[in-house]
Length: 198
Image (cartoon, rainbow, N blue to C red; front, top):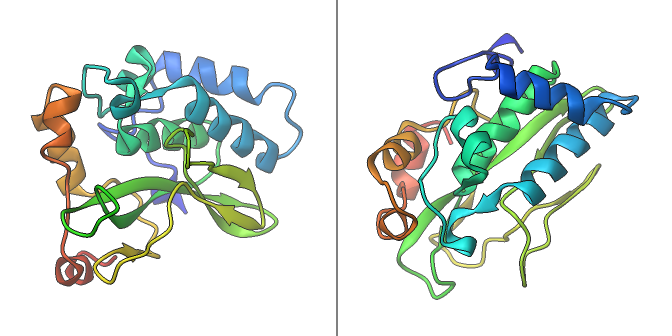
């Protein structure tokens, strides 16, 4: 479990502002499950999705997501992992491969989280941000993610990774605007996914 609690350049949960927020969110919560739900709802509702709100800059590091209060799904998952880890809750990264426009190709990765809860083990949660047609919730043991797969080339990868995928980090660090990112969303083929352990 230690790798799912680690501090890294991207999941920089030991930054003072992340530690302060993690304590604030956890205050009044009596269980790890309650803390995880509070962290999830904070990131889902308080950090604006870059595309939905057409916001810059493109963030990647957890502390930058917190500073600018905006991020694509991947960046939001980085902050949620940081808040969970700061509260001693193991957190990892999950991905789906989804149609960008719900019409088939082109496809891109969608990023979200899993947290290890004492009473049930790994539980996947999607803090992307709700909007019309998207209603992600924290309702264990049921899983309620933002999106479901519907095409043959889509995939709901079951792997839980301790660090974000390099292709995701590279995309976030290369792009500077929400519309530039939209044109360069990270993707892996189903064949590549096998090689990545997804």
